[in-house]
Length: 182
Image (cartoon, rainbow, N blue to C red; front, side):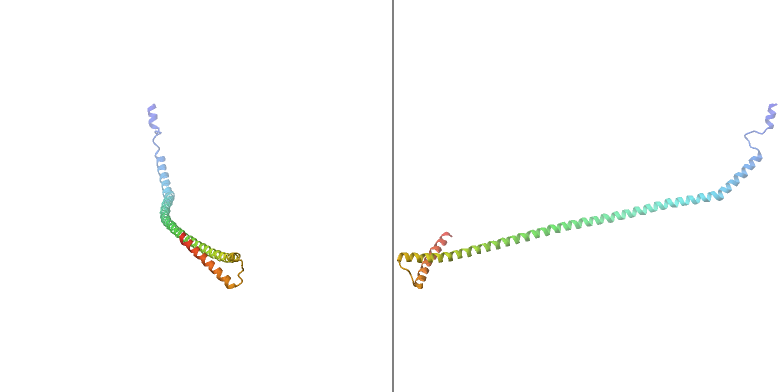
């Protein structure tokens, strides 16, 4: 008997035909609603997300290209600035050498001028000393002559002649000494 009872009752694994039809209809309605409303929204969100990612990648690539271009320009400017700095250094060195040689030439000219002026002053001092000595020696010679002769030369022409002859003798002696010293 137990077997017969089991055959009359439906198996719990197999659904009833009404439940099966209701489940299929509910699934079809759910599938239609999802297909009509949810899938387009998912597609739209997917496209927006794809566009955002692709746009971000594109912007990143453009930014990278711009950065590369700016880096290249910077390196070119840096190379130009280095060349300019080298040129400025070379110009400064050349100008320094020129200034140095000009200053050296000016110093040599100044030294020559000072030397010439010193020599002129020495010559002038020597001439002045010679004139002073001649006057003094002339006076001393007159006094000596007066003492020797025990007479006083009263006449100016005689005094002048005596001084001139004495100075002539001194010039002769001085010229002989100078030629002997050279």
